[in-house]
Length: 95
Image (cartoon, rainbow, N blue to C red; front, side, top):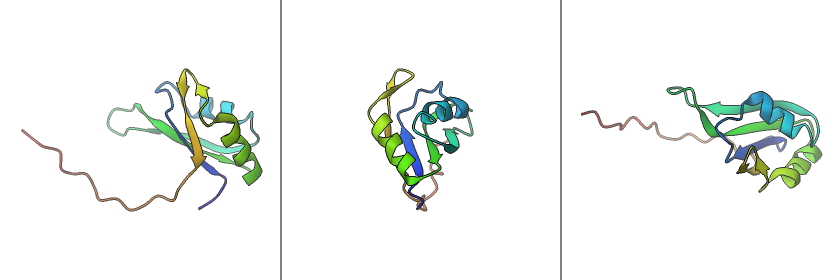
């Protein structure tokens, strides 16, 4: 996995891609920033990913923002892990 891609958890539901990018630009050059949205409701899922240009900038971003508040919520920031294949959750009960 790319050591420059960061997982950002605990985001306020009001944070959007551009806001996330603006915050992380304090640590260096941001290649991309994406807040993950729920497909059904269109609401933020409260986490996202930020890709920094260099590993050094990614490390600086972790040091700057892990455990700090962004828009009133303490966030966790760490190196993103590769996406794993998870079983589908189609077991919604229908009454």
